Image: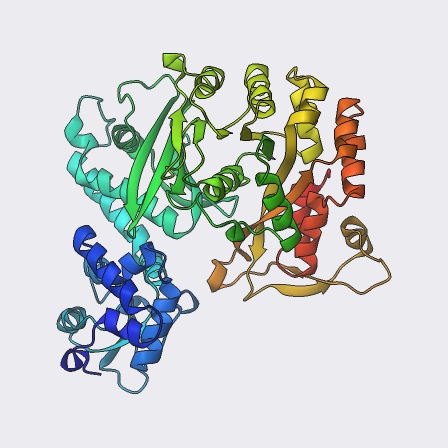
Length: 563
């Protein structure tokens, strides 16, 4: 297909397909001039269209095939035809020869209208090129799958060659720390983690080797091992880009890195901890836009969404979001703030750390060294004429007391607690020294939440639920109930799961619940009454997902065994 002769442009094609409007195209082109990025990337960044929408429109309008590379095993001979730097430059990857003509190479492209890219591939390989469409993410994942580890090995080999001998990096040898092989290795490690949807990277020194693991969908997976001799250089590089003290190896350190992966900016929180065999690194990856979502994207069921809207519509009181680390509390809080963020309200947050910047909201970073704690910041905030206050976490009695007083005096306060259930959050506040009658007056709602893994829709397998499972989920034991189990395929990287969804327990305050809190009858009585008044526990909400085939029984047991 001669796209050059036709002079087809991506923007015009998307307008013609009805995927975007002419006005959206003009706005995107203006922004493209400023940011220098590709038009497709700009449109996706602006939320005008998704990668899947672009691929579908291109395939339909050009009459060419759309492929999902995660379902294709590429022959090794094909993967070696084009250098990886060229593949990344054009966001493309050859994946097969044409069945009709072995002189034709099939190439997956994010933009099959790019004739220059096709010509370059044709010259490099000496084959004719048949373009097909794939999403940017699908192509980059395929590049990582077939070239990622090789790139890392090449970087390590180059580093070893430059060093000649396996020696430790001296803290003053900046040329080693910033040497291109180590820079490339650390960058590739982060890029690969992002594309595999990892939330954390663990770099762990063992006695004989370095182990690298990614936390994907809440589960740690081993991804690579390296010679222990490169650990000092890796640690030093991470310390430099994270703004930490490179010479300090005896104390824990925290830092922050910003890195752009596939045109998306990621905020990376770094924690370094000295261990017996060297310093261990954990990097938490967060897309800067990921925390600010539409409430419809949280995974709340319709009745839960109604309760959520009711709670945040209160002009004053405390909304508590509770759950363990990594359960999505920050995302829920930021979403609530985004909903409340209008021109007629003054919103101030105090956080440790500030996880995402939201336009129109005043955000304060806790700094203990400057004696800026949650409690001291809150006292100052109350003199700033706030309407809504967000506290990153209530950690002590002083912070809890100020938060309660602020809510009683006409402010809406949203915050997090580390407790196992909605009802136990009340007990936790009592343990911090807050009077029960003040809790009853101030708390307007508590959201306990967890994240469960979604079953891969391509490979999940059905089975009949056992009597014990039916009993756990609260369904009639006499009925035949079909539930699903993980299996594993190329689509989910043989994990059986792909992605996560929120499970919620929302306790909306009622006069009856306030009475129980005031009389200090305990969490069990409070929970029982809340259920009587319509609260769905984590177990109940999770069981619905099991019965709908969204997640597995074992996942719900993991997050709600004691609920």
